Image 1 (cartoon, rainbow, N blue to C red):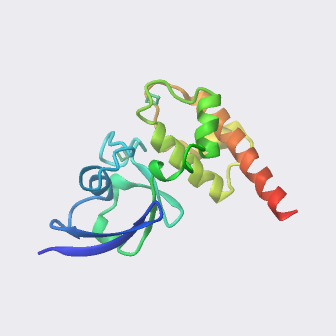
Image 2: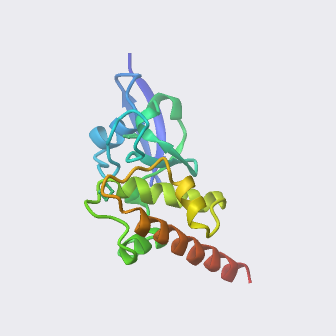
Image 3: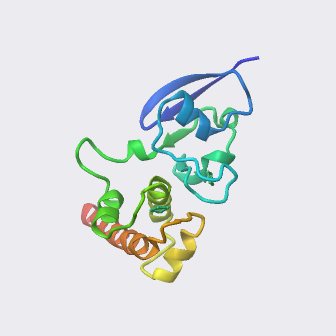
Length: 165
Ligand code: FES
Ligand code: FES
């Protein structure tokens, strides 16, 4: 039996027919909607490569059954840049060499965007590392990742304050 769900993905409304209720959001994005920026590492909730935002909160999409997310708003790595203009977190990862092979990077960046929105990490590298600990980097680019998150956070909260002033 098919299940029909509707999702808003990177601002665009999509109606999706699921022929299998067990399909995960990760497989839906990658295999059926051609959004392959979100990576599959472990497929069991241990590496964070598949991190996306659902209704603004970061989740591991490999553990999420698509059928449970009818009506949700989803942001993937493909939805961050505005045309040629990178999202501040993307720009900070480049500026701080926050990657080597790049496989974990979309998940790291989505997790960082979620973390900054949570407003919990502050500028303490230890706390940032802890808050990003669900995202594993086999290349060990943690120093650059942490610096990038701190810089992007400062930039984005400064920009917000500027808007409010
Ligand atoms: Fe989802 Fe590893 S692929 S946590
Ligand atoms: Fe290679 Fe993180 S940059 S796994």
